[in-house]
Image 1 (cartoon, rainbow, N blue to C red):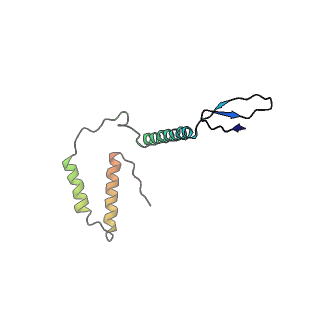
Image 2: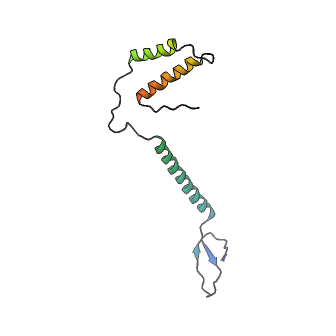
Image 3: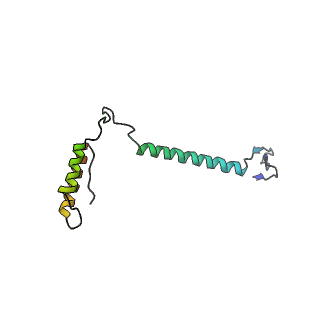
Length: 121
């Protein structure tokens, strides 16, 4: 059992059964608080970095594939706009068939581009 002393330097323990006394360095509470706080912040930053690395994967393009170098194809974009704006119009709650056809058209385009497409219930 330690006896508290007014100075911050060392704590004077009570004498043990053998009569010998040992002196232990006492760590001030403020230093202990900041040490704990910095360790908690470091662990939080490491966790955030790990989460960012997990979410941002894969970095760059997958191996064996090249980045697309071509710009957008104007004729292809125009065909998509015509399909959605003219052929599958109007799209509102009364025309559920057009909504379903537009959803199928977009899903097919994404699947053709290599995306994994799923539908929510």
